[in-house]
Image (cartoon, rainbow, N blue to C red; front, side, top):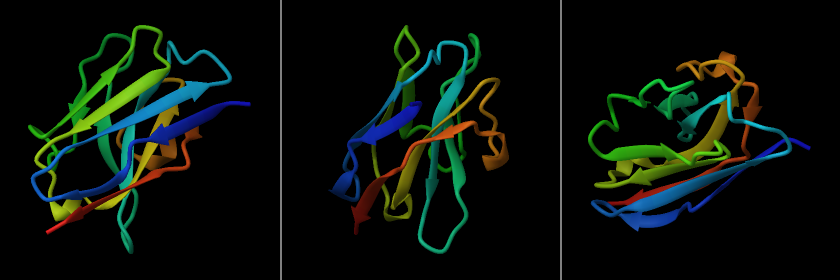
Length: 123
């Protein structure tokens, strides 16, 4: 079965750091776009970071630029989100996502979703 499994979520104080990991399995994702979305309580799921598709450079939501860094291993089945200088507004469930073409910034262009990992940032 195709699976995206996130790990690394937890509780952290404002200004701290967390590293999220997404492990993909069940098929080859080497040609898929992969990245991260998040959803806070009462809000719509929103784009966070795209690792890039077929050599494209990584892109980030304006709200996390300069603080978050996305990376991907050579095989393409592991995606890391390094989160620094965390703010309370970063509190959300973070979801790994993959698409056979470019990931995009909208939730409608996603082929596979992980189940999410909760990140809570305290003041």
